[in-house]
Amino acid sequence: MRNQIRGLMIEKGLPSFYLTINPADVYNPLVKFLAGDEIDLDKLTMDTVPDYFNQSCLIAKNPAVAAEFFNVYMKAFISEILGYDPKQDDLEGGILGVVKAYYGCVEAQGRGTLHCHMLVWLEGGLNPNQIKEKALANGCDLEFQKKLLAFLDDTISNSVPADPDPTFELDLGKVHQCATRGPTESDIGQNASISRKKDLHNLVKKCQFHTHHPTCYKYWRGAPEPKECRFDLDEKNTVPVSVFDPETGELTLRCLDGLVNNFNETMLEAIRCNMDIKFIGSGPAAKAILYYITDYITKTQLQAHVAYAALELAVGRLGEYDPNADDYTVRARRLLQKCAHAMIAKQELSAQQVVSYLMGYEDHFTSHKFSSLYWTGFVKFINDEAPSPECYRTSVELSAPVIQSNELGSEEEQGLTNSED
Image (cartoon, rainbow, N blue to C red):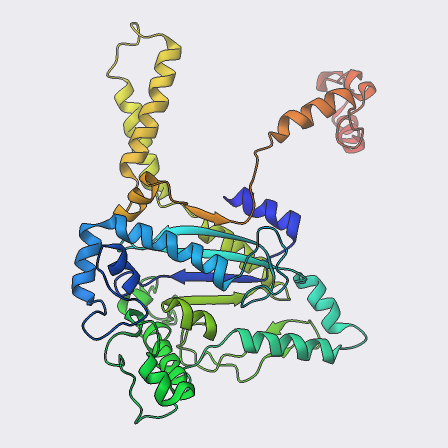
């Protein structure tokens, strides 16, 4: 996967946004519908909205439903929210703009449910160096800075919207907001504007507001090391306005509430689950972000020490066979099989991951197809046919005699010869 992401970066440049989508399968009514319940998704009532406990039991007993839900959900997100057009004929694009490429990796959480980390490339998007150059052009291009910051402030939010009317109650306001489809027809009939603002207010409080738990500090080593949340969410982490540094071109986005995870309002209203969105902007931090992203979304579920222990066990068991009775080729093949089986046995896989694989669902979502190119074979052929003098010594250098140390007259001459070499 990492090589495919690198290939997209070489072909399309650096991505513009990094998204995380975490579907709420224990609440979403689509899961209930896919499980066979005949409910009208467009006209949910207090009697038909999913119950957390019952739906959790349903997913535990039938992970195939949750796997199907996730696959349907992500494909709908890509086609409708991102608005990606494989033919690139649609110039209107989606919420973020015209998407020219995307790459998302599927991962299982500790409780086994699936979520997706995705890189998004936008048509006309600039890489960090180009943003920096334009922002600092002719002293400072204030017009470019103003337009870019306005776009990002409109796209990325990180505060709980104000409650438009504390006395106004949505029809389904007493249930979890992830279990609804938004304001009902009755809500919209009363006041469409207040209904939508009230729904967004409730969604952000339920899905995006962070509450610290002991796991937030599991990497804390104790005093005198500062006790910081590993998600970097803290009420003190606030920035009142988005700004460009006039000296370095570094882009700092506003953060109005340090305990609210980044979100896009329209996306959140549509997907109705926890999400995150980050802009990959200017400055040296962009490279660090990209390294973290590609390392994080392609990380293995099998820890190194567990893998080594499994390999050691497999090699040890190979000695149970009589070395005189087995051919070396057979023994080598058997060793590889045992190593693979031992590592697979230690791999932690959730039921939804297994079902997704059996049902042929994607373990990653991408806009492009990739072909493996065995580059070393091409390089060897070119080097054999036309050796590069810059990379390899010439035939004269290769044929030059090697001076042995005992042929040198003295230690001083030997030191002089070595220094000249």
